[in-house]
Length: 247
Ligand SMILES: NC(=O)c1ccc[n+]([C@@H]2O[C@H](COP(=O)([O-])OP(=O)(O)OC[C@H]3O[C@@H](n4cnc5c(N)ncnc54)[C@H](OP(=O)(O)O)[C@@H]3O)[C@@H](O)[C@H]2O)c1
Image 1 (cartoon, rainbow, N blue to C red):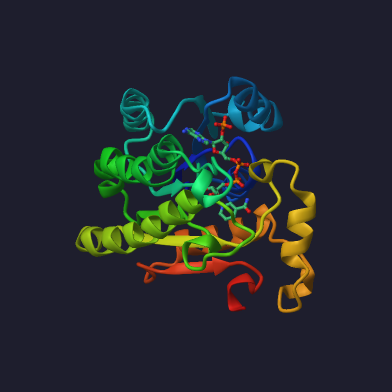
Image 2 (tube, rainbow, N blue to C red; image 1 turned 90 degrees about the vertical axis):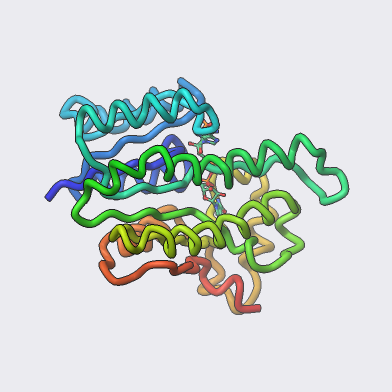
């Protein structure tokens, strides 16, 4: 059966990989990004899926309550249920703990932690209509260890919060038959890293990192597809980090 899937931030990096993977699995995907040019480029990449109504790429900001309500109304009207909710959109805003401003903290927590919770709340009744619903959050290796290469403290704190949110939601939604899990990627080259190619190389050069290679969006998608299908897995945080957090 075609699954109805929501992926926030599907217009670049890991999110774009997730969109492609769920489309390839034959699912119907709703996604969004803030920048219209990136949304348009995603539509062009998957023009056939868009024409067939298999991909619905929206311009929208997940921190905007009105956008979240419009999204709920659209999925309710067109699909009547939601099977997979992927909280992927995220940002790193600052460099260096003491340089971070309170505005950096507010913005990061708003996008990386509060909006994922708000999306689960607003889409909850559609998840309840699914015969096999699950939520998958994009955490990070930075959630558990204060790596020097990840300079943003507010980002690490937001992701640590997202991991506890994952487990709290798994506890709360389990009785409704809704599973909640997270993946915690290591280093995935994407627009989020900007032009930090050297930093990526340094980070993956350590001996214990598998084949000294970064993680790809496809690696993350494999784990997300697994969690979407794993009927008895809930409350799990699955590292997809090539061993990054081992040492
Ligand atoms: N890359 C890594 O090494 C890595 C490692 C661990 C975890 N992660 C996590 O994986 C997720 C994806 O990261 P990525 O590397 O793929 O980042 P990315 O390439 O920067 O993509 C982020 C996506 O989220 C969207 N987005 C950001 N803020 C948004 C908002 N307020 N409303 C709607 N859309 C928004 C962006 O669209 P616009 O630009 O149009 O806003 C874009 O589509 C994030 O949660 C990140 O923390 C990444």
